[in-house]
Image (tube, rainbow, N blue to C red):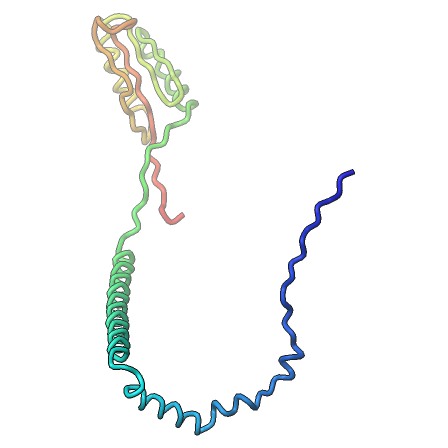
Length: 194
């Protein structure tokens, strides 16, 4: 039986609260005394004499660059804030417009329509296939009846949008000289808010 591998233990240093309790907080008092602020003031006044002129110029340039950069960032933020306010104002003025799209009608509705008009156009072969209607004639002599059947499909239902998917007219069309496939959709209007 193989020994399980040992997972090494991490030795994390522990914070010693006892040392914190033993710390002499009164030793920090010397940094907040009036003498400490006076010493800082003397140090700052004597800095030009103690530091070189080159170091002072470098510090002044660094402060100047930081100031210019701060001013530039402030101006840019102000411009962005104004542009954002204008954009929100423009979006508030934009009217709510419904979305309009074409939706295929049900195959049952198409089948019902084809069954109701088959007897009217006896010389034609009418078939329902999903949301499409196929109209075919075996002879160009049936052109008038075929054309009327296409018009009937276009006006067949309430709210129908009929598009020509396939259309072939003439003797070169095989196997039928008159054939058309019409796809039927309905207009769908949807509220963009819900």
